[in-house]
Image 1 (cartoon, rainbow, N blue to C red):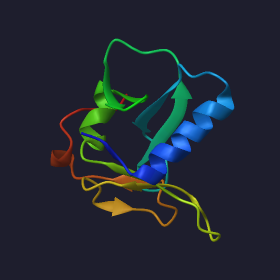
Image 2 (cartoon, rainbow, N blue to C red):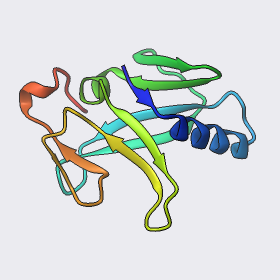
Image 3 (spheres, one colour):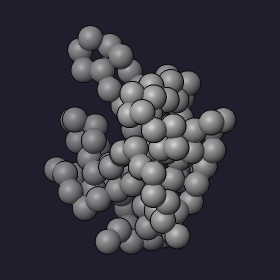
Length: 117
């Protein structure tokens, strides 16, 4: 299960409204990139994929592809609007190391059952 704080939900809804397409949903994933080996991906999307797992938060849907889900299960997504670097914050209990920027992480091989392509 993915958790979104109230602040993150408000910001994603604001971005969706700004996009002008109320059908869009949040897509979360991971990619092999970043200084710690893996990085988070996040975008508004309107095309669901067959292997997506979809979570609903009221009027907002969050989709995660099957390969990424193993790394993101139990993730909490937060939003901070502080003056010194506001933005989305990923709190991932499966991460064994996170880089200073907070957008890249690594895990133990046992921590995730799936593979990222």
